[in-house]
Image (cartoon, rainbow, N blue to C red; front, side, top):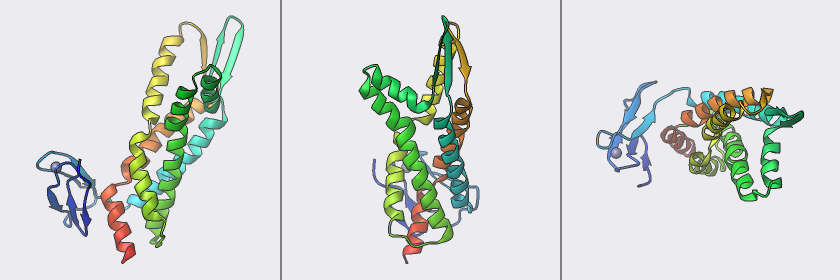
Length: 207
Ligand SMILES: [Zn+2]
C-alpha cells in the first residue's frame, strides 16, 4: 500500500495513488476513491473540538474503568472481584505472561497513549499553536491506531459473560459500564481524527 501524499487540497488515494482535488468539499461530506472505493476523508469544520471532547471523555472513562471492579464472580461460596489491571496481573500470575503483555498493551497501554496524544494534538491544532512535537505525535497516532483492540476486547468480554453466567453468579461492576461507554467514545475519537485534515492543518501552521 502506498503512502498518502498531501499537497494543499490535493490528496492521493492511499490504496491506488489516484489524485483528487478536495478543495470543494463541504462540511459533512465524505470522499471515496472512484477507482478502488477506499475512504479518503470526511470533511468537518469542527474536527479538532470533536476529538478534544471525545478524547477527554475517553481518558476520564478509562481512569474509571481501571479504578473500580470490572466483574465479580461468585461460585461454591467463593467470591472473586477483579479490576481491569488485576485481570492482566492475574494472567501473569497464572503463568501466561505473554498473553498478559499483549492484553495490557492492546486494551490499556496503546489506547492510553493514543488518547493522550490525540487530545494534545487536537488541542494544539484547534488552538493554532505551532508546536514542533505535533507532527511527530500525529505520526505515532496514525501508526498506533490499527494496534488498538478495545472493541475486540469488549466483544470478547460479552461472549465470555454469556458463557460463564450459567456456571457462576457474575456481578457486573461500575468499571464494566464505564468501559462499555469508553469503547464508544474511544472509537469516536479515532474515527474523527481524520488523517488528511490533520496533515493539512499541520502544514498550514508550518507556513
Ligand atoms: Zn483508490
